[in-house]
Length: 154
Image (cartoon, rainbow, N blue to C red; front, side, top):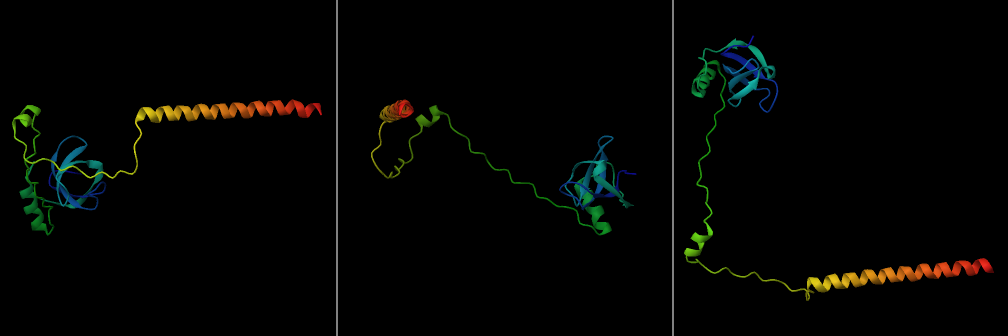
């Protein structure tokens, strides 16, 4: 039977194989756990109850759980919160226009491999190539049609 303060082994998930203690009942299926695992909500089916029980109050803090773990010879997971960083904000165009430019940007060197043909010329040359292919195919078909009757006559 799982109850508050019951020492358990996590059998599923990222923290599988680590020991934890039930801190609080959230629902008929879920409990809040803490200990060698991350402090989080956990499904009861993912826990295997052990014989030991720790004396903690309902909703005990991480510090209380860490102290109780230290008494029984286990080490609780200690995490450091991330430092809050200032998020850079984008300025509106009007504010950018009023600010003086810091430095002119240097232009990147571009290698010229050959002369580029404008898109309109590329399209027209592609259309011309397609029409030439069509006419060549039509001529080939006509030649084969003409040869076939002559061979039958002979």
